[in-house]
Length: 311
Length: 245
Image 1 (cartoon, chains in turn purple, red):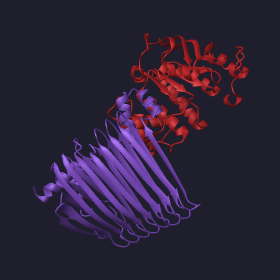
Image 2: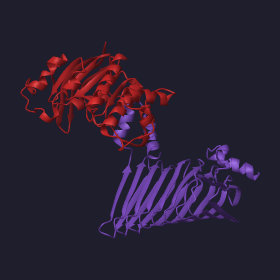
Image 3: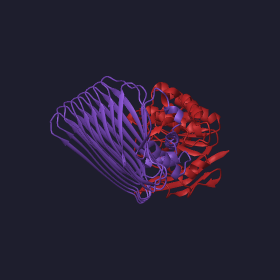
Image 4: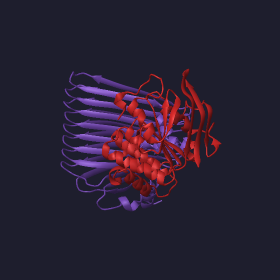
């Protein structure tokens, strides 16, 4: 299969029309297994890639002051049923630069696939970086997803990450993000996951509010069915004056699924303030009765409530 | 034609007799009010009619189009044409107004239907369709959105628990217009209320006290209840003056 055909197949598997991203003003990078099959850069974005036996190493740099108007598209995936894809990613967002990344990870035929990402993300003072990662898996659940990242936010920097895995089976997933936030920086991490069958979900997110008035919100929404299991350990440590943080975890549990949430908040400055909220259980009775009273069946109502929570 | 017949309905909750033999008839295409003080059993009666969990083990019967509703689940009753608007509508994190309003509607053109229903309750579709039915909406907005969801499904019978709760004066008129639109389309509307203003929207009213119907009749006469503070019986549970609008 040619590189162009692989790009097309990868994009189609995540529901994207190639014509939407194969445009001169849209930066993009497509990686199939350990091979860069497509790339396009725009002014202000520099990308170096190295192909390895088991994946790729990539260094993305946004130059100082660069404002990338249209979202940068990254697509990592594998069409074969088995294999390992290891992405080593270094991202440097230089001072006052700004960009949004839409990353798709697709393993539509996975039977025994391991997708591992080790990222180091550095967001310089005044820079803004958003990273939306959407996974599309097949129905078999034969994927092991292991994204680990360390994030440094400089003074006044903003970082938002959204991890979404709501189509197909999760398989096994182990997310670990560790962020350090300097003064007046803003961090938002949101994970939305739907797990079923024998899926296993493990999320560790940690934010250290090291600078004055730094802010962080860690939000996790998970829906579990069948025999799926989820463990969420989200931590915010506030070391600096007037730091603010909130940890929020909601898990809807059905059938024989098991959920565990451990929010950890630590405050080491009397002017800092960190809150947490965790709710685990079946769907809210009032929501359910409201939709039943509109004529939806119980299954339809539960699906709609979960769709909302994960939207 | 009588759409709903409540026959000698009695219900105990936690060893307390909450309804003590209520009987009432509701005809098709008419607007009714059920009034009475706190604890009279008004909301309980609505919950029993709708078949909510915890309100299904009752004595007596409820006939809808001549058939008993006993043993039917909430969704089964809804598919027969009954629905309920809550005093305090639920919040749905992440669920769009568009999807919520059209959740029970049988249509392939949901967005247009949702937009039309929102207009009928005085909400501008462009501002609301894509918003979530969550805490970013005020109680009054959620109340109107819930009514829009009821207009969208065109039910045969609507139970509305305190429809004016949390609604401002301007929105209240739109709420009443929507209630009368439901009537014009042939729906029966049962208003559970403490409010004289809401009571006036009805054509016939039942006065409940201590789980019993102690009077029924024209709205003007039943409205005297508000003037006389439930002087029709010797029960001591007088309405809270704060709740008498």
